[in-house]
Amino acid sequence: MQRYLRQLCQNPLESKELKRPSLADNTEYQSSASTLGTLSSPARERAAGEAELAEVTEETSVMADQQTLETYKTSRRIKVNRRIYKGKVKSKLDDVKFEHAHSILDEVDTTKSKYKGFYVMIWFSIAVTNLDFMVNHLLEHGLESDILATMGKDLTAVALTDLAMYLSMYFVVVVQKAICCGWITWHGSGWLVTSAYELAFTVFFLYLAQWKDFPWIGKIFLFLHSMVQLMKMHSYSFYNGYLWNIVEELNESRGLLKKSDTLSKEVVDHLNESVEFCQSELASQSTTTPFPGNLTWGNFFQFTMFPTVVYQIDYPRTPRIRPHYLFKKLAAVFGVIMLMIVVAQTTLYPIAMRAISLRSLPLAERLCHYPLLLLDTMPSFFLIYILDFYLIWDAILNAIAELTRFADRDFYGDWWNCTSWYEFSKLWNKPVHNFLLRHVYHSSLSAFQLNKQQATLLTFLLSSVIHELAMFVIFHKLRGYLLIFQMLQLPLIYLHKLPFMKDKDTLNNALFWAGIATGPSIMCTLYLTF
Image (tube, rainbow, N blue to C red; front, side, top):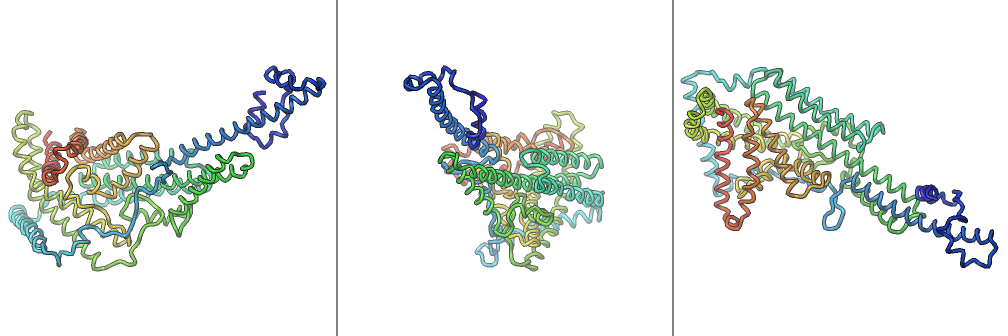
């Protein structure tokens, strides 16, 4: 009997062709025989059998419908990992939007501002100060520069290593091509192969830079670039992996709907909803290149050139390259690099040598010298920090965006007005924040079933570990200073939300700037001295 029920649940359409076991001697059905007392024994058995067969068929049909519905709901939840928002199914790909946008500093027309004189004054002050530093350095040391010498050491080897890293990125395209050909599936081995390769990629090139003994500037450049490439590979792979799951669900739903005559209305409605969602999800990704038509070498190459680490099939583009704008940004790149070299060589380098010389002293003496060392470091390091922001997030990223006609220039927000470290984490580096939002925060909510507080903690922890790893690349030390200080931002975030701090924007902004002015200098001097 149980074997018959299992067969019937597995395929209700074939129930008429199955030979059910005799029910004549089954005591479970003897009560029905009392209503058939006038029939002969063989007729009574046949009638009882037909009645019970109809009852069993109806019960098993309901069981099959329920089993199909529950199995499909489970499959839908696990494979696609959608997020439920306000009772409705919400796509995983609507958390990051790309649109035409200018960088904030490009939106300000300084020539028409009432404060245009202040902009001129700031840059003039920086230029005069650096001219003074440069002239004095030339008079004392000539053209010798330890910073330039370090930058030029093993330059060819570093460039070739960087090229090897870039070419290694294309392995993820091979994986997607294999899925497209049907050799593997994403939910089967595709995601596992990709994840293992990402780990191997990170470890190998981190070890290679250490083994080749590149200078610290070359090492940190390769490490930071490898992190950018890692994020690009991960976003490309898991974006397309999500769409492969959508395609699989669409095919599964359509296949089940072909048996709609045997399914309940609830199941059919559920399947139709799934088909509608999957079709909408796939169609909304691109109006010109439907998935999986985007899985080409050219599409991935284009993505690697764009100044973003979050993949999607189409991006907003500008109609043309503006030569004047591009020249302005390229001039800013080289000009700011020269300013940073001058500041580093004339002010920070001597202080760094002082800090290193303190290592031979007992701990108590180092602690006595540390406050003055920190105070001497703060002005120059603060200037380097601000110049570094302008160099990367305004000059370099906008120059790349102009060359590639990438229209979304929203690389940073007005972080200088921040009143909490939570705001700063969202506005300082928007490309990386968008990656963490989609592939760490929201993925941990859906894949690991974490709550928002746990997902936030995981996101901050991962970011802190990567920053600490960067300190290891530079200083060859695992001290955990940066990891601890960055994780301390979490209690500071809650501190800013307390009632007595909530509406004091000026005070909160002053505390924020105090952290910006002291934090980087504290990190640098701690790693150099202790």
